[in-house]
Amino acid sequence: MHAGARRDGRFRVTGSHGRQLLAISDLHVVYAENRALVEAMRPNSDDDWLIVAGDVGEFVADIEWALGLLRDRFAKVIWAPGNHELWTPRDDPNQLRGEARYRHLVELCRRLGVVTPEDPYPVWDADGDPVLIVPLFVGYDYTWRPPGTYTREQALARAHETGVVCTDEILLHPDPYPSRDAWCRARVIQTERRLDAERGGLPTVLVNHYPLVREPTRVLRYPEFAQWCGTDLTADWHLRYDTRVAVYGHLHIPRTTWYDGIRFEEVSVGYPREWRRRASPPGRLRSILPAPARRPA
Ligand SMILES: [Fe+2]
Ligand SMILES: [Fe+2]
Image (cartoon, rainbow, N blue to C red):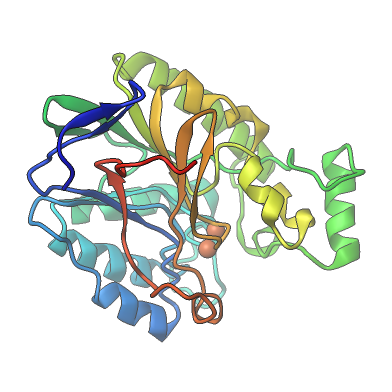
C-alpha cells in the first residue's frame, strides 16, 4: 500500500490497512477456461471488496454460480448487469425477458448478499475519505452512431449492411418497454433522480457495464458496434457526480484512460480467444481504490 498523500487535490493515495476495492467484468463463464479463471479469483485481504461490472454470463444458473462463489470469498460483491445477463437464451430453463429478468437477477443477488443497482449504495471508507460506490444499470440508446449516419434507423441499417450486428437485437428483449433505447432512457431518468437525492455530496465510483462517455469506443475495430455500447445521456455524469473512478467493461479492451482528469477503468476479462492473445495474464483483478500512486502522463 502507498503512504497517505493527496495528489492534485483529488486523487488520494492512502494507507488503507491493506484493504482494496477491486474490479473485474465480462467473466463470460459459459467458457470453461473462464470458469477456471473465476475459480482462481481471490481477495488479497479479508476486507477486500469486488466490483463485477456485468457480463458474468447468459444463463441464470451460471450467474448464480459465479456471483455466489465470489460472494463467499470477498467481504462485499457489487454487481452491475451486462447485456449478456439480460439475454433470454432459448436453452435457458429460465425464460424471463427484459425488466422481469433483471428483477429476477436482482432478487437472486439479494439472496446471495450481492449489492445491485437497486440497493442502497455502499460507502467505501478508507482513512476517513468516504466514497459512494454506485452500481448502475444504464444501457444504450443508439446515439453512438457510425460516421455518416444521423438517426437510429440509419445507424442500424449501416450495421446490417456491414454485418456487425449485436446479438442483443435477437436475445435482449426490452419488455415491457417498447425498445432497448426506451428502457435506457427510463433508467437514465430514474438513476439521475436517485443520485441527486441520495449522493449526499460524497464523491463516487460509478460502475456501469458500458462506458459513460463515448471516447473509449473510438478504438473499436468496427465503429458500427458503438451504437450498442452506451449513450450520450451519461456524457457528463463523471463530472456531475464527483467521480473518482468510472469502472466499465463490455468493450473487451482492458485499459486505463483519463477523461476530464478522471480515471476510467475498463476491467473486462473477455473471451478466451481474446485474452489468449494478450501479453498480461487473464483474470487479474484491477485495483480501483486506493488510487495508483501516479497518474500517467
Ligand atoms: Fe462482454
Ligand atoms: Fe457486454
